[in-house]
Length: 139
Image (cartoon, rainbow, N blue to C red; front, side, top):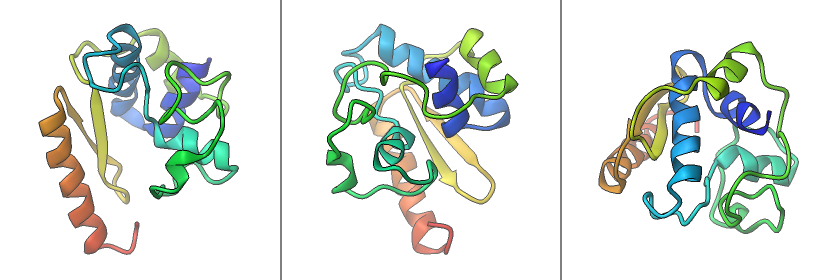
């Protein structure tokens, strides 16, 4: 249920099984992504702060002292962060096949999300998102 809740908070549609795969890849291979077992899911930080799960987080937000903060705590949070729907439950039970360790939603209006197998690719997508935010009022 906890993984499904993370998928619900982070994804939509066809991206949900891929997001589930990223979560499982990070849990099953904690050193591979350079995150040492941390999921680093922004929605968990917002949950810990008691606000909308889709709000952009700041550097200061990342330091919130909470077991739900997956930016600082390894593994899954202690419980779900929201009620997962059927699609999120299905994705958690049957994640996509892939070697992804990162994802970035590069367009908040359309939900376009890009998946990366390595950190350099992730950084390119993160830069794309920053450029999007500089030219959009969605951020």
